[in-house]
Length: 216
Image (cartoon, rainbow, N blue to C red; front, side):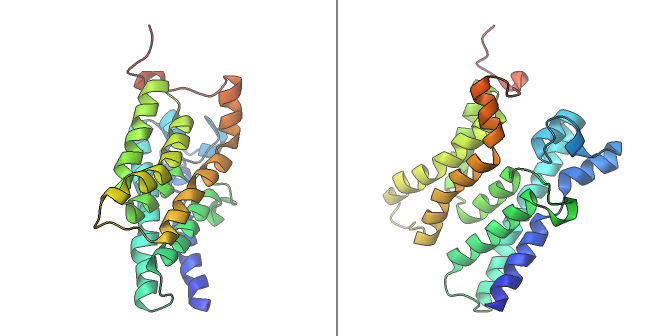
């Protein structure tokens, strides 16, 4: 069991890399958590630093999740630490997401985990992820709310897996991954609980410029 802790901690440390906080320090000598929405994620980087740094932050945050499930977990599986690769990938994926959200390098005040979660999902569900991404994009250009887009995309993942994958005879996701997909929406709801309150109150920040269907 010691190897499992080592793999989990390794994934956690990778996820803890404080991408957005470093971007704020390097570009404007600021703590990104003290500006904009106060969140250490790509969306707030876009608000405070612009779209170019935001894209770089999003890519690196996604890479953290992908490395956790495709490198760290696979390395552990090949060492025969656990017979179920899917379960090991989930363990490492959770470690990376928790690292991003509660970064040891940032006083345990990180982002909401969406960028790193996206990287985990690309590694675990490469076919389902584009469909969930489509849900995110359609919601974003319709409403302008990144938080709502993230919530609906996360919720759509288990629906996609359970509703579409049975039609693919050659694709049969392990039970562990299906269970994980059912837990993802609850994690996203938890990290976006304040956003949900603001959505209810009508005070959530909206990106009007991305709204294609905006009413004049």
